[in-house]
Image: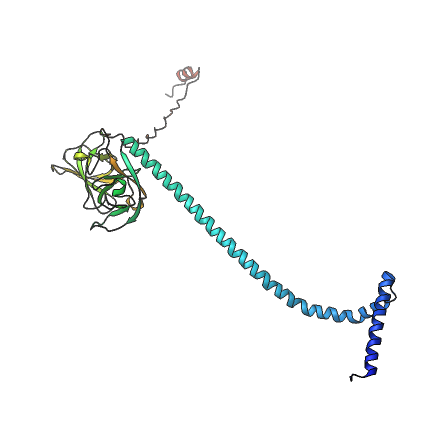
Length: 317
């Protein structure tokens, strides 16, 4: 449309009419004379608006779903992290409780034998210093640890210290083939030497070939001169098999150690020997054997006339 005088007048007229209609509609309130025209327009353009909304809503919903999906993914990731942290905490708490029980058991054993111990934790296991059965503990010379000290835990003899560093030390385990310790049999006091076999059991050679021993008898350490490398009275193990003597000067038995060498954690290094030999006092009390249930015998009691009836019974002859 050309910018002529007529077009400008038409534009001004339309604007004036629009303002007039707005003024009339506002003053009319709820009974506005334009309500009819508005309803006609709504009837004409309502289906078009609904169609446009129906076409646009899926797009809006999709955009909202993508936004919500990102929020849900972040929340799920956060919950997974919280769950993982909770599992780690529970595992750590279980581990802490287990170590507390081991420490308590070890201290009770040390107290029973009057051993002054330095607590330590096993931090490595494997070949070291040319030995095949060793562990490394997190205590060393800075903690008063020296070579040839006895190492024990709550169950009994673990081994002896071989080499020492400022903050760590190497312990030769009792099941190593190069390990030997003097032993004393419970009650009978028969002496012998226990040697590691590189596995679970120990081999003990009793000095008395005629010693009376049986399966289930227990042994403790005999002790060394000057209490190094072994202090006396530390539980060693229980006899599982007695080999025939065959008239030899010595007698051999197989012993199952009290200590599980594959699951060591908390140990104690004996830094102060006992004033007196504890002998068998560190060994735990054996559980009492269950007593057999008494046998009840029920006998029939004859009636008052039973004897007379028997006596008066007719003779079969």
